[in-house]
Structure formats: structure tokens, C-alpha cells
Image (cartoon, rainbow, N blue to C red; front, side, top):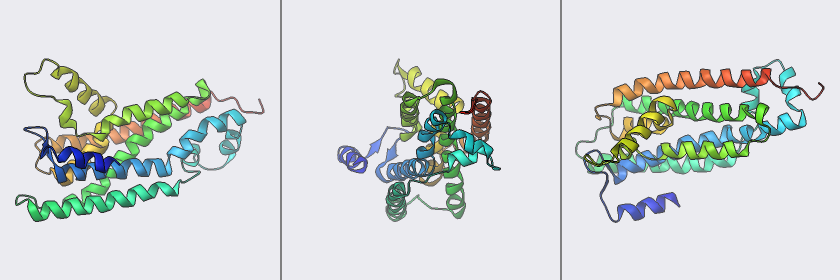
Length: 246
């Protein structure tokens, strides 16, 4: 359905944006990356994050705490929603088709082996960034009980990552430009969800973009910091957990 929506948009325009816009098949590389990252997060982590509050409510978290394995690892990967991989397969096919089209019809598009090696690495970084946000929000269930609204908050936040970061800059001279720039800065360097998809997509579709190197470096730093912070929040929450036997 999303692909049909974007096909409709590109029937009216050749590019999203003006000076820094994305052409149709460059954007489809981006769109495929969005689908890959989100489908993998929802396949492996979403079912477990949603069930965390139930483990607390029923007292079954006690059994997880007693097992001789890292609790966050166990909680995060108890269940796998294999049906979510259907979106991953579709996204990979769209990605390959878009890259093939760019290589055939864009004279200046050349896919370097280094790009192919870096792409899965940064997709993994994007998954860890989104997972870190998800598990940190889930951990607050220890203090707040059932916090379904926080899962909605996760979707609202990650919606910012579904679009190229260039759109947040806005046209030059627009007095409202500072709003978009503020959002771009916040969701790139404070909560780095924009980097989760933009960096791997730009590596393939826009490898010569001038700020790619700085974004790629910060994506690695942001991934490490996000994961460390999520573990701190998770284990701080566990210290406040009162077991069912207490």
C-alpha cells in the first residue's frame, strides 16, 4: 500500500525536493531500507517488548530473572514473529530492483563493493537504535505498569525515520525553516532515529553526498550510546522491580 502511495506521488513529480531531492528509484532504495529495518525490529523485538508489561503484572518476570543468562537478552528474544519477514523479503526485492534500475538508467551511478559491505552494517546499526528506544520504553513498565501509550509514542517517534532527512530542512528563505532544522538536529543527534534509515539508504543511493562521512561516524557512535543507555535504563528499572513473591 505504501509503495502504491509513492508511485502515485512520483506520477506527478520526478524528484522529492529541489536541490537535495531524491529521484524515484533513489527514494525506493530509501523506502526499501525503511521496510527492512522496521520489519526486522517488529519480527524479533516488538512481540517481546509488548509482552514485558505482562511479565511484570503476572510475576513471570521472576522466572526470567532466575535463569543464568543475560535478562535483557532473554526478554528481548523470547518470541519471534516470523510473519514479519514477509515484508523483509518484499523490501529486499524492491531494493535490488531499484539498484538495478539506477545502474541501467543513471550514467553517474556506480555501485562500489564497499557500499555493499557497509549497507548491512548500517542496517544493523539502525535496528539497534530502534531496538534501544523500544526496550528503554518497555522498561518503564516496572514503574508505570501497563504503558501501551508508550508503544504508540515509539511509533510516533520512529515515523520521523521514514522520510529522508533533507525534507526537514525546508526551502531556503522560508521563515518556518528553523522548525524542520530543529527536528532534524534533535532526531539525528539526541534521539538518532533519522540516522537509523538515512545512513544505510544514503550509502547506496547517494554515496557522494557531502555529509555522508560525518553521519556514518555518528551513526556508529549513536548506536553504541543508544544501546548502553537502554541497558542502563533496563537494569535500573529491574532494580525497582518487586517480585511476585515479595
